[in-house]
Image (cartoon, rainbow over all chains, first blue to last red; front, side):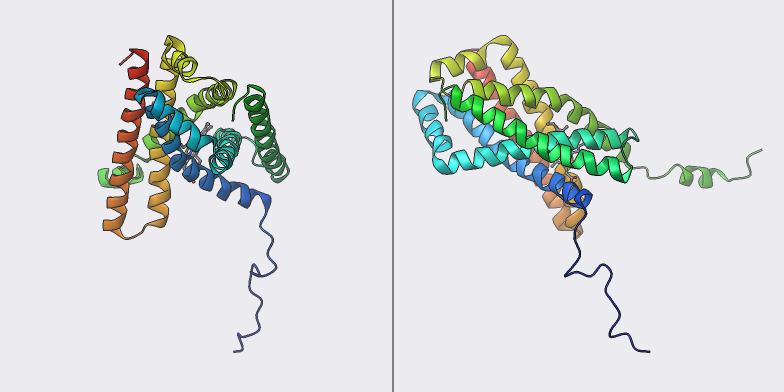
Length: 130
Length: 126
Ligand code: HEM
C-alpha cells in the first residue's frame, strides 16, 4: 500500500491556528509570565520597606528603558490574562461555547486588554511618573 | 435494588485525588483577583510619579495595606495552582515533576510571606 503521498492533517505548513487556539495558549503563557513577574512586585515592595536608597535603586531599575518595556509587557499580560480569565469563568459556567461567540469574546479579550494597558500607561505618564 | 458491588460503586466515584478542590480554589482566587488587580494596576499608575514618602504612606494606610496583603495571598495561591497544572502537563518524568512541584510551592509560599512582611513593615513603621 502506498502511504507516501497522503496529505497531513492538519497540513503543518499551511495550517492557520484558529483564534480560539491562540487565545488558549496565550492564557497559559501569560499565566506563567505573570508568575515570574511577581518577582518584580516583591522586589519593589521589599525595596520600599527597606529604605529610601533601596527604593531609589529599585525605581531606577524599573524606570530604565528595559524596565519600562518589561513593565509594559507585564501590564498587557495581566490585563489579557484577566480578560481571558473572565472568558474562562463564563465557559466554566457553561456559557459562550458557540464558535461565533467564542471568536467574538476572544477578539474582545485581546482588544480590551490592549485598551486597559494603554489607559494605565497614560495615567502613569500623566501622573508624572515613569 | 442495587446490583453493583460496593467496589464498583466506589470506582464509579472517580479519582480519590483532590482535582475538584484544586479546580474550585483556582476559580475562587481568579474571581478575587479581578477587582484586586484592577485596583492595583490603576493605583500604581496614579502613584507613578510620587516620591518615597508618599508611596510608603499609601502602602501603609489601612485599606491599601489590607488589599495589598489580600492581593499577594490570592496571587501566589492562584499562581501556584496554575503552575502545578502546567508542570503536570509538560514535565512527565515523575521525579523531576515532583521536584518541580515542590520547588514552585515553596517559592510561592516564600515570596508571598516576604511580600506580606514588607507591607506590614511599612504599615507598622519598622
Ligand atoms: C487578574 C485576574 C485573574 C483571573 C480572572 C485569572 C483567571 C484564571 C483562570 C480562569 C485560569 C484557569 C484557566 C484554565 O482553565 O486553564 C487561570 C490559570 C492560571 N493563572 Fe490566572 N487569573 C488571574 C490572575 C493571575 C495572576 C496575577 C497570575 C500570576 C501571578 C495568574 C497565573 C495563572 C497561571 C500560571 C495559570 C495556569 C495556566 C494554565 O493552566 O494554562 N493568574 N487564571
